[in-house]
Length: 187
Image 1: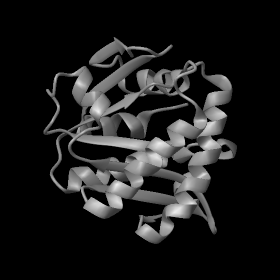
Image 2: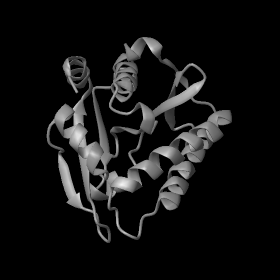
Image 3: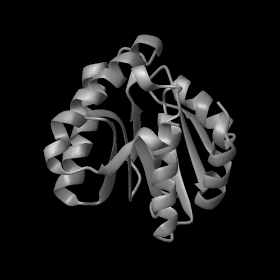
Image 4: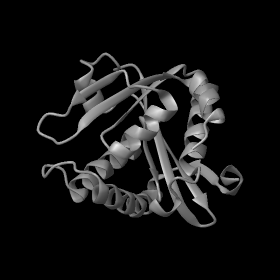
């Protein structure tokens, strides 16, 4: 069982290079199958995401967990508030006080094997233990949207991203119900 083979811990600033190495692989893999337009490139996306990591460590407004199998980093997930600028813009700041769950990245060699589900459950259970009732998350990647729809239903917001070839989907979900759903979820 995947959950038993994972060691999950909170990320620290010295993990930055490990995170970047994993994300470089994941983002490059995603861009091979996704048509995100010419305005968005793997290098731009990685640079944007790494700026978010730097802000997270500098400001302490978010928490990131790293999942290891042996000594190998196989996945990441983070949460924090306020949500990213894309979510705030698409919702007219409606979700400004909602915790965003994001940066769920799984090594391409480990995808579709339960690692993401295990990491997602860990983060949601941590949030529930802190008294968080509702979270939001978003996606621009078609492969991820397919998975999120199967797991959580239709998004609350679905808008075309201006100047891009993709739509932006945003889910707002109940944490406790999401944990129950994930425990029943079959790939």
